[in-house]
Length: 119
Image 1: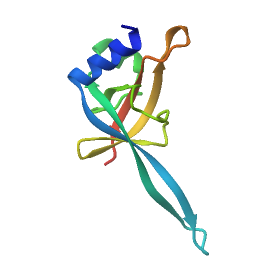
Image 2: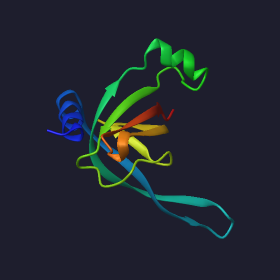
Image 3: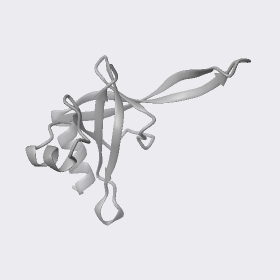
């Protein structure tokens, strides 16, 4: 079993179903106002983890209270998560603050996403 399969197996075991929401094409009205298009949902499996104390110190203000560290499995996800997307876990939509691909040696194992409540 390769490392990608191992990462996916553990995320599936300890995670849950989620969706990466990619915004659709928007439209502009005659006054220059922008109306975003509907989001397109891309199903995935995600596991919410926690940031360690050291990471919180290193971040030096880049983390907000309540930010989530979410590990997203590569298998089953047809797109690459971006900071313009949202992540929905259960019924809660979260904004994506940061996306880090874990791909040592060029092989992608999983995505690490810093997610934040949209309120």
